[in-house]
Length: 415
Ligand code: HEM
Image 1: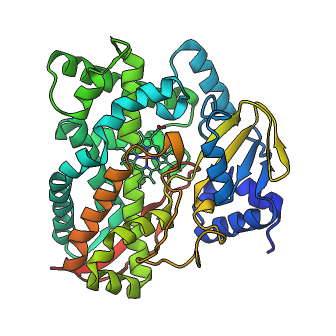
Image 2 (image 1 turned 180 degrees about the vertical axis):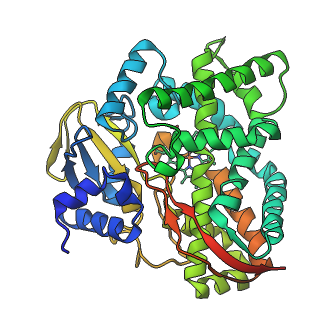
């Protein structure tokens, strides 16, 4: 069946379409070719312009004074857009870095940026490696067969980020459930409830948990990230409870599903491309390139949005003040104009100018940490891996935001 440009555009507003890799990328390729600045009018969503070329995503991210994150940083249904607006007016909406623009964004980002700077991250490497070993050992304990996405990949990055935040291990299961309910919201398998009240409750549960943490760290500061956030000062004043809780929420959520999706998708790519797997095992110095190729290949963050503060012309199309654009990172990362043979998984790809971490003032704060985690995991796994194959069909999560494999059944033997 031939795909039309209109259908291709509508796929960007359909969580289920994101779960079908082949069809999804077919839609994106068509849009890149025939309508790179494309108006999508889907029944359940406010209209938006889909931006699918690498060059255009970059141009919009560079122009951050015109293309703002507020008030619509992410694709949500009309109903949720309305609810978010109402909550913002009542002062009970999540207000994280991705919801902010300058001048607030710069000030609030600096609190985390200091903690996440690459040198500080490198100091964390031994701890991350220890955790990677723990999870590869767990694979060995599982006896040669597991659902890698559910049993390994989902836990390792959460474990890393929660231990950096300074949360006790006894709370990790609760955090796992909450992050999945918050992020996997479009996928039936992870939904707590369908009503807006139930969705709001997930957010309130998060806030209640982190409010307790703030109080504890203000009373007894330690050297963890939670203490840095709880005791940060802006113009001599501490952050209010809402901004503090929002900070934890963005770190706990942004730092988790993204990296686990990359590790699952990266392993899947290595299974499907045994030649590349052998090449990487024989030439471990390729690992930094392989890590970025896995991140490009998976592109776990499917979109962020911006809203125009004034009229702007892109490729002859006028985006009017107040209209929103959707930056399609998976599409930018398969752009034929930028990547040589973009549908080839190449562990030695160089250059690799992928946009999976975004670009510019909102560039992913956790990029250095994410790279360390992915690298630590595969550096531990590959030398011990004797054989590996699929033990069933992999399945993607149905979501328009952070996605990747939700099931990856594998059979393997490990030293
Ligand atoms: C922002 C991707 C891992 C924390 C972002 C953005 C993307 C992204 C696309 C938006 C950038 C933009 O708007 O230009 C990813 C990917 C990851 C990953 C692909 C893993 C492979 C992490 C980790 C953390 C983290 C491990 C923290 C522990 C953040 C934060 C922001 C962000 C705090 C907001 C930055 C801002 O708005 O100023 N990430 N991320 N991310 N990420 Fe990540």
